[in-house]
Image 1 (cartoon, one colour):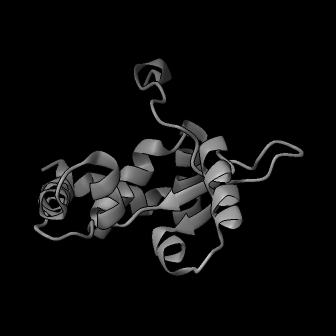
Image 2: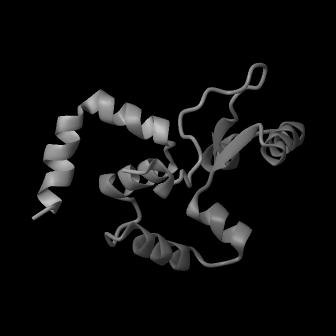
Length: 129
């Protein structure tokens, strides 16, 4: 099989940060809303978010305010996106997203870690019939 037929389209998932650069930290929107932070601390966290040193895990209310749409409209979109009628993605949806983001090397390591025979017997062979 030619490898160039399947170019990597996603970003690496589990790469280690470059020397001297730390990974962005995650701040939940709930923490921001209920943290009782003073204005100076809010400004520092906002600056970290804008500069990419922090990621904010949004709530539907935050997304509603940022994108200017209603919470029910966002929830309906989440249900359609997840394909299961719920707000939370299924494990299969999460697995597919992780696979799509993985590099060819990460995919190969996944196959080695769980065993090529398991991938073939449980994922490929049932779809050949």
